[in-house]
Image 1 (spheres, one colour):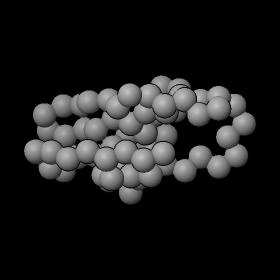
Image 2: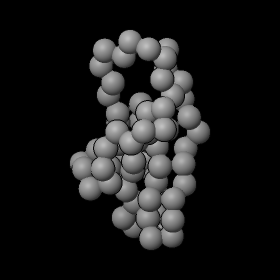
Image 3: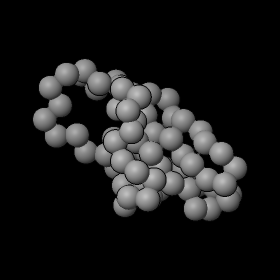
Length: 67
């Protein structure tokens, strides 16, 4: 799955969510925009989304369900 966001203001950090649960921290390399989340061995249907954070606030992508 891929997610990207741009400011202003920069920097924009990404938080990946799986079924509403964070999958990374904003300071992790995975939190840099653009970002790709790999989910090997997925054995159940899950919903994924990403949140873009910057000084102005947070916006959340539409969710994608992977089965």
